[in-house]
Image (cartoon, rainbow, N blue to C red; front, top):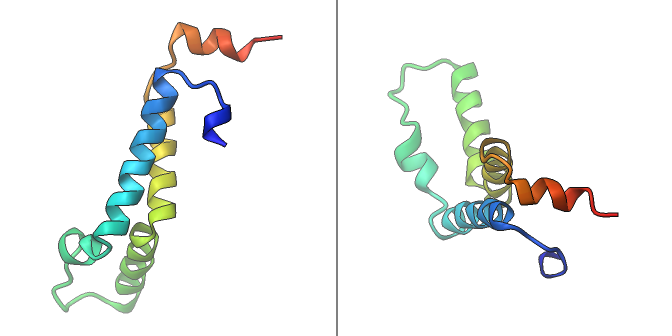
Length: 89
């Protein structure tokens, strides 16, 4: 799918960032439970359930890769060449 698309520098950066995050989570899936949010034992059930749901989302390579790609797509400004390629007839 990606090979058939003409991608500019911005789009390559978005794809590379999403792949980097997804592959990183696939290699080390326990990073979220070990370093991200440590419980001290005084939390209530609602906070514990919220933590577990966030960790499930973050531990999935597909979801974290997609979230990183969406954030990069929104944050990286478009080039003038990207706007011209959108209006090709």
